[in-house]
Length: 314
Image 1: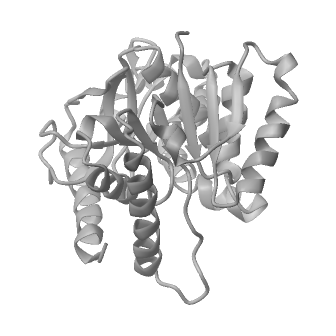
Image 2: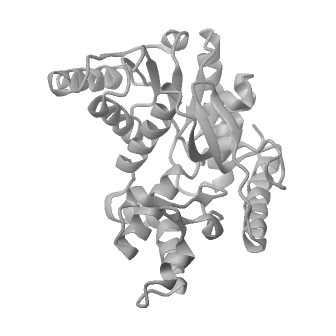
C-alpha cells in the first residue's frame, strides 16, 4: 500500500478498536490519535507501539493535535457523548451536533482536504452535520452507515444456510437505526438470488428470514445488554471502508452517503445506501431496483431522518 495517513478523533472503545484493527491488518503507514484527554491518547499510542514488532508492516503511531489533520488522507471521527438521565434523544442529538461542528471546524482549520469518515451515532444525522460544517464536497464526507448492519446480516444468512459469509451478497439500507431494512430483492448467494437458493432447501422457509432481520436490527441492543457497548465489529467495518478508499478499489459498500438523486427520496440528507468508494471518496451511489415494499421502507426511513434534522437546532 502506498504512503497513507489516518487521524482518529476520539480514543474510546470504538476509536481504539478501529486503531487496533488498523495495526493488526497493516492497513496504514501513519496513525494519529487525538482525544480531549491528551494523556489517554498518549497511553493508547504507547500501547499500540509496543506491539509493532508483531505487526505486518512498519507504522508510525502517535498522539497528536488537530494540526496533524492537514496532510491526512482520512480523518475518522468517533467522538461523542452518551445520553444523560432524563435527557431526550433530541437533546442528545443537539449536544452531539455541537460537538461534531466543533471537531470538524478544528479539522478544517488545519487545511485538511481529505476524506472525513464519521462513526459517531446517530451516524446519518452527524454525518450530515459534519458535511455542512466542513464545506467539503459531499463525496468526501461519509459515515459508516449500514455497513456494520450489513456485516451482521451476512453473518446471520451464512449461519442459516451454511454457506461462507464471503459468498453472501445482501444489504441493509436506510437509517442506521430502527427504520433500517433488508433489501431482499437484491440479496444473492454467489450469483444466485437468495430466494431461488432457499427454494432448493426444503427445510428452510423464506418467512424464517424475518427473524434474521429482527436479530440484525436489534443486535446492538442485545450486545449492549450483555457487555454495555459494541466496538469490535464496527472497528473492523471502519477498516474495510478505509482500505476501499486508500487502495482505490471502487468497492461497493453500504455507507451513510448523500443521496444524489439515485433514489426517489428526500435529497438533502445522509442515509445508508450502496456506494462505490475509491481514493476520491464516493464515486457514485449505486441505484438498486427496489420492489414496491422496499421503496416504501426507504422513503419512511428517509422521512424519519429528515424529520429529525428539521427539529434540531444546530
